[in-house]
Length: 479
Image 1 (cartoon, rainbow, N blue to C red):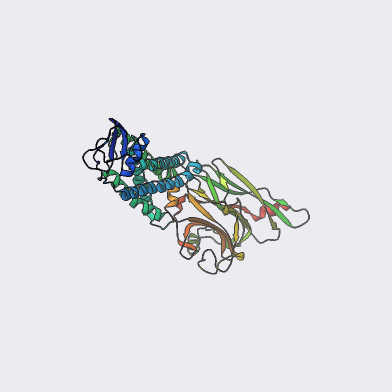
Image 2 (cartoon, rainbow, N blue to C red; image 1 turned 90 degrees about the vertical axis):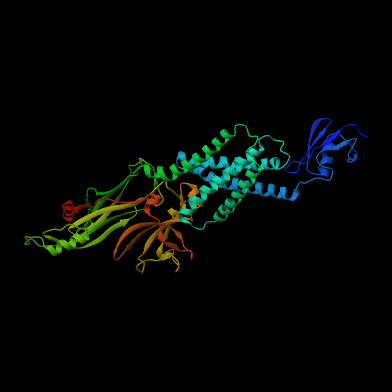
């Protein structure tokens, strides 16, 4: 029989009993079986008689006192590890999108902070086993404390952002479950006094708080301040070139130059664009001497000029079409110019030829659009169940462009229902034009009637000035 002296101390408040052999610490044990394992590792025989007072001394409690609640302790470990790992995966899932794809440095920094926070939580999950075990590592409690604090702070941020719109998303059950878990985990860690034994606890607390504040400030900067501080400005122009006559046919070729430029500091997507060349019909009365008050009222309501001798009666669209491909990316300083040629017969009854263009832009620092936007949807090829309802019915023929739009900050994407941008270009008996809306799908899978404000994604529609030339100048080109 071994002459080595074993001393088993009284259980601590967690039920763990310290073990010394010949005056040297040999570990600790949760149970009688665990004690035999410790003694075996120390080189003592596996069948050693633990009741032999000559070999084993029991201090503070006898050999039957093992108060460890194994099931409860293991359940606590399992819940803490599971919550920390789920939180770590959530933060990595949210942050990786911005870390790799945000358009601004602040957005990428915010994404990297989330990924880093998730990595810290993964390490904290591993530290749980030691802190709720035999605590052989000095700083395992600090790691667990930091991991839980990150969960409390980030879930609070995510729920605060979600509460602004209160929409259902697939992430919402995860947010709610993790928030409840974070409250329980915080209380559990507080009861265990996890901060005890941490060197410089104030410094560590200050560092963690500073990191959380930096992440929150960066979110506010990238999602709120920066998209409103940077200036966006675009230029759209339509003007005529020199007309040319056809040498054989009574037709005049009138060039129309169309110009789009990004003069601001923010990149943008083109949601839609179009130009229109129209011919004006008018009645001429050279005998009039005063402006008619009723005509002036009508012109004021229509937003057109009042002319003394001329009464415009109708406009006819001669040419119309897109200018820039929908979904095109226009960086600051980009200058795009194209030219169309309008063919006008010499015997037309117009007095004025007009040209204008319009384009709709979405700021690139507030949203990213899926590539599907470049694919046109033709109304005459759609099924009976259309993507949206026209008002008033029936719908004119239109060409639509539709795609998912993502906010540039992924925190907003995961706390909102998906948003879609839909732009239309139509031509009908009542006129033509382009529009764009951003909305989500409703419960029936159709575009919701509730649309986002243009300000949310920085959508702007620019219309060029109307360029006019006398039709007579085209006839002069033939002489």
